[in-house]
Amino acid sequence: MTHVYRSRTEPRRFFIYHELTDQAALDTHHASQHYGTHILTYLYGMFEPESLIMDTYNSLTSSDVQKP
Image (cartoon, rainbow, N blue to C red; front, side, top):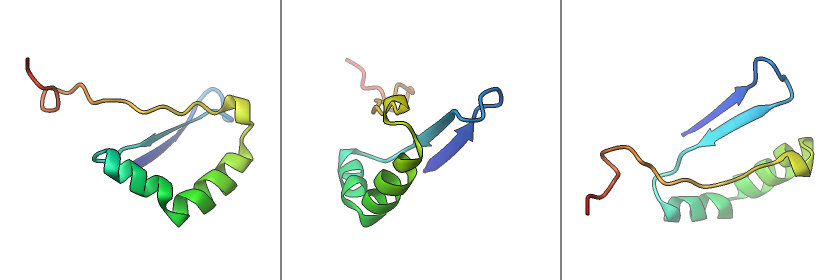
């Protein structure tokens, strides 16, 4: 699932939310031609490199959190 948002107050600021099921799905996505060609080359080419912030997160919803 992917959602792209544009700031209402800063039209040059975007937030892209990309959700994958697990690490294997992320690895497959990163190895795909779509990611290499379209995302890294075209999309990131439109932005200033120092403005890009990429990170991965763990879910903290109650259904995903393991109890001790």
